[in-house]
Image (cartoon, rainbow, N blue to C red; front, side, top):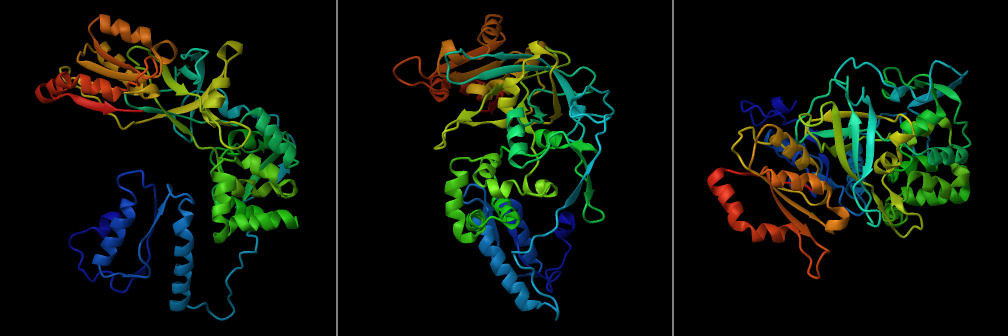
Length: 477
């Protein structure tokens, strides 16, 4: 479609009989914010199309999210469409109060001993390159804290064994990890919704031709569904409250859910949900009468699936064959809620201890955005404060193993004694002449020092590398 639309041979009247409207969804923190929507609108206009409405650009950075643009745009769009194309006699617009059928129906079955909750995490022979639909169950080899116990931030260097996976990667690539909910949260969720976590079920699509969720085994237990699939720790979107409202039989709770679902209630919803980062599970606790009556078949419509998390690979296969290492900060912060907010994936990974028994983590590798020079004499200037140093650790290991010198690293952290990741490793490479290391410890002296200060101090050296030796510059973190 895109290639056809941008053929230079298309006459300017190609779409003269076409009415159209464009809604783009994007994030204004990116330089090419809604680039595709803007380009599509411009091209269709060039070819004679008639816009029903000005192009609308939803922005994830808005306090109310893309809904701030979507709501008024949809209202205006339906008004235009109904004016141009009235409904035929006998047809009416479906009321917002009408509950639509679930995407899948859920049927409980007798226990099937051949299916267990651990199936997706069991080691298996790789039939193809691991991917999101077929992740590799990698054995966790080590899970080491690399910050001092007294330091506020818990950062881990975690190693996985990928023997037999067929996975290959280069410096700059990323590993995708599929996290899961904690047993405590799963138990709370099942208790609140009055679900038997060990009961088996099968899913059937409500409409012919609808595919079943690829990552769910059939049959499956409620525990497996909640542990591995439903993102009960995410901050729910407005659509969650709309569906929950339609499922509510409690008058007081339904009134509040209606407010959160309405265009007028979005400021209130933002204050209740988005600002304090209230999770789906916490919201359900606030609406207990509604939660306990949710039909199980609506769970997959109500709650999105757990998305994989991306981590820069912090090691090279040339130094650690059949291994992947990541440098991970455990996400924890406070909001106005009394309970600290915790990152789902980092908290789960940090809780795993391979010394207490075999631990398997589903993962696969994707190409990253960083490509390091293959020419041995090309210097590389890497700026990686904090865990941003992870891809540069992989690059330095790879380049040193290939005999490449000219590696220049600017690393920044708070204190040399508390969060200087991989200190001994860097110092050994400096001693051997493979690395130029410039450090900035922001809290080790009265005046704060950051990597930009070290860059300025070494401007002459950097200019020499850039202007005379064609150095490449990389920034992460």
